[in-house]
Image (cartoon, rainbow, N blue to C red; front, side):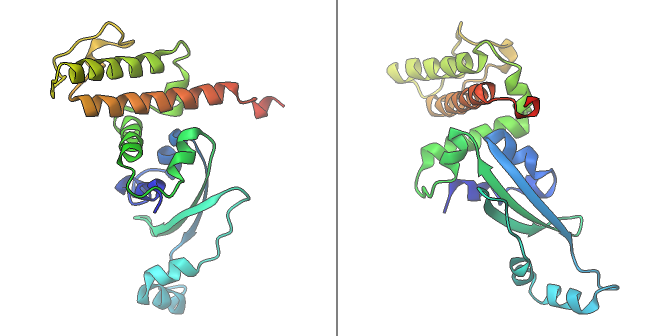
Length: 206
């Protein structure tokens, strides 16, 4: 199992466009959508679909573009069948595509990065607005706080302060050394992805 497979079971996939979930992780996204068979217009097809929904969906033709890997197929609340393929374009995305069962560290960082995107709104556009090292500075603040807490044998870092935090104090939320390191890792991944996008030639200008 790949770490990315955990994301395909996320409930947000039924509520939001898949690009919103996967593009901030560093993936190009290819999606094909087909309507579920209409029982009035396609009674026999609909009967086959309802008899074994999973088998029906698995049998649908889906050929992703070159370089893309199919991730999943599912039906959504809009009576659509969604077929998803992705292509990793960043170091984080490549890590998520690896078969690394039993890699809780990478999974924890990936989950925190996903939380930043979904709960905090840290989209690609949001990250790209920080061009002066703020993402790296934020990572350093959390990592530094974790280092101090660990050296002082503290399990609670929530009251600790730092002068390295690049944003408003209301967004500074240390909790425990391990959790702080997860946040640091996710911010480092975000900064690396941002640098890669910055260095990538603008194809639209070609």
